[in-house]
Length: 295
Ligand code: SF4
Image (cartoon, rainbow, N blue to C red; front, side, top):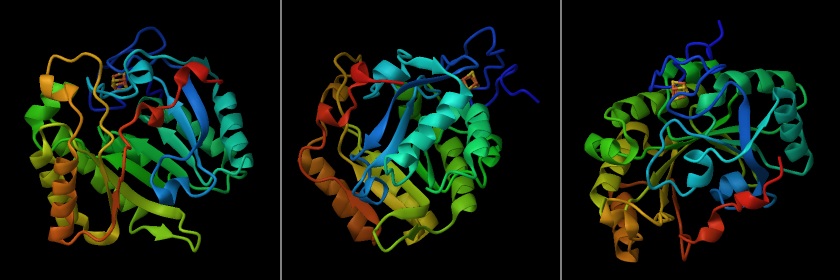
């Protein structure tokens, strides 16, 4: 069955024929990439010493209005490539010493990515990381079973009214938590090698939004009660305010005191496996320069 002719790959369920038109995500039937490189700014067990082989896909099915990668996710910046070229890029990144292949925002291209991963499976010796907003269909994630080793998943909102306001979906928490359950079913408890590099497992990212530290605490509480220390929780302070936004709170950075309060909350409830960002991580230098991209 060709999933692209009546696209219901993600929970938006647009039903469009992507050979002829675009749905909510803005993607056609062809893979579009904006950038790939060895990236050193992921969690330490992902970036290691040599970097994560990061591949940024253009377009997005969630489209948060504050997205720090707006140029590629909302504006669709990038270049269309063939499946064969994606396979070459994956092996090129492996050849450059990447600790893993990190597929960033892959959801809307999963059928194509699955074919590519199957075609390079015999040559690929490093883990595959699926880096997602978690606004995913279970069926789509099940297609990736056995091909993905590490899920690097966001859990963005506890309160669905925030999801509706900022990401245009009213069912985010239920959908995303069911998706994260499926990810955990696939990869189980994490494994980290003697060089402190993750081989398999689940990392859930919690990006604190300005004015919404309570929501972040609810998310952490949910994750810890559900998975304990079988997973890692990455508590992020790198929220980057957009230049314009109709919600004034989103034009602010997250204060140090709010970030500390959320981190202390996590420690107080017993979280051991947390990644915490220190110093000025909310800098634009963390955002790849897509203008210099070469695909
Ligand atoms: S992948 Fe894109 S076209 Fe398909 S259902 Fe999701 S948003 Fe719609």
